[in-house]
Length: 154
Length: 154
Image 1 (cartoon, rainbow over the protein chains, first blue to last red):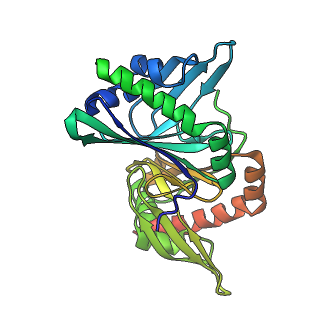
Image 2 (cartoon, each protein chain N blue to C red):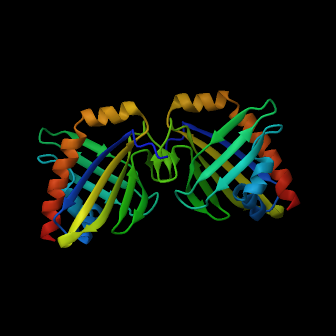
Image 3 (spheres, rainbow over the protein chains, first blue to last red):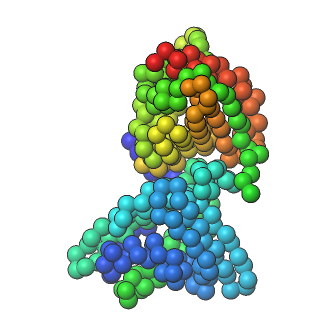
């Protein structure tokens, strides 16, 4: 019954333990290292890990570009599932034009690896198509490579 | 710093105890009795009182009109605060064009009464204006009258 036609999905098996992948998503200092495809980088991150808690970062690019990404967490299930969106500021205040809900699911894979499921859910087909054209698959794929490389070292 | 320009607000002192007002908002059988201005009525309600839980009702009108209102709760602070939105189905799935976030705040007033603060927050000025033109003030005002009348009898 669920309509997934407005979703974009990345699925991987990451060669790192699930607990480490969770840490990379939830500890600001780790997140800064992998979250956007280099040479872009996250220069500031605030992660208040509870429903309605702040999920904020600033991305900076090599030419001095600077993008603020405000939002909140919707669900935090330690080690298993993280859901967040740009649609609210803390206090559940609607902000801007809502773009997406991100959902990360982690599960154990054999050999101490992690099944990694990343989903971007959109309010409209137009937004889904725009996100894909912005380079969802490449961008989230490179970020997943960076995530795996960092998680292996922890 | 908070931008409230896209909000619509109703404030009242209701002549009923706070616990009763809370029950009217959170018990489906009570909610059916007051939630929409009569002769419209709520014929079905499902209220799963937790962040991400279902907040669903069906309104029916005197000419056979039927409106389904799906959504989820965002925050549930018993006796004090209830936040909900139409922007998601359960599972945090974005749905349709998000219309509003509703926030209800209750506080004790003197004489066993309740200070009632109802706020509709919107993602755009256009939506706020449309909601106002749809009769926000009259509709939520009549519903508050009905709520008070019911809460006094409990």
